Length: 452
Image (cartoon, rainbow, N blue to C red):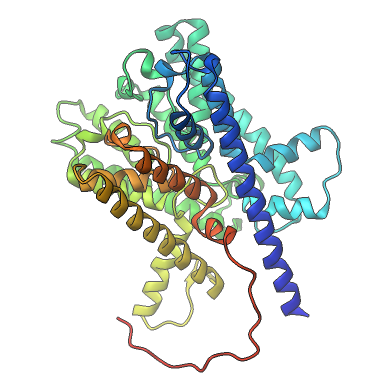
């Protein structure tokens, strides 16, 4: 009976995963078609591949671009991109369910099960309430962020444009989208003009972190306030890991970039630059310092951060913080010859370890294959730059050292696939193509091999 229930649960999960994959693909294609319209392009005509690349990057909240967002797209095109970022960040099923709630439509058991998979929550009970909190909380946080950013953008760009820029960048930051409109001053400039602005830096960093810790963690913090002991194990791991990565990343960048990317800056500018550089690879795509100017050490740290990404059930990508923590403590348990993996007084299941292993190996394998193919197609490109671009795409980080526009057609298609895979989740992407599991009447004999 238990085995039959498990099979049904796996089948339902695959069905939901395919639905989510199809939904994101449909949104991307719709967005790409809208961006090809003359009304969306300042030149009056659209390039289908550029539109598809931009639509994928926006929907998968990545931030990689082949054309400058402000200088290439009209107001209509920018709003299409903004809508895709919002839908991609919160999830189309989450937004759809919230609209159903507003219209007082009944959400059945099957829809609730799909929502559990969509928002990556742990249980079906209260999932509709969680959806309401996600959408309402996101709008409130984005609104507050826009108000704070307007204090800097209105004096610089005027009232109308300042308000619009504030809303656009608040949504893009919270959803970890990485798209910006600073091409109004200079192409592909991102937020470099605000490298020493405390308000812009801290607001954007906060929006990125809040969007990247996950909706379950929000709910847990709201319910239990500052009582850390009452938090779910998941929340404890996410919050602790996020703090460690942010603090350690800031210190590392202060050391590695002091005489490199941060040369000539004041101490406060160096600190803001280090903090921003530690947060944005997970996985926001903005930058206040020229990414290409980072030292080799800084680029390596950034690549590691992009690979890790944010946390499950959030607007961020990557293999996720929890996966890395699980594998780290699994390795520690093996070294110490411990049978169990214990964290915060709780024992992790073998299923979690298997899933974390699968996610990391699939992401690493896809990154390796993509890098080899792009380097074979374009051997003149620098290896480190290609690897940086690939990790940025699959981690939906959106950072680049400037080679995105140099990629040929096939390389761009590869990056598009990686962004889609990164937003969907590498394991979920694999499940889309997985065949139905066949029950074996006889299990194969077991034999040991030497490992390590």
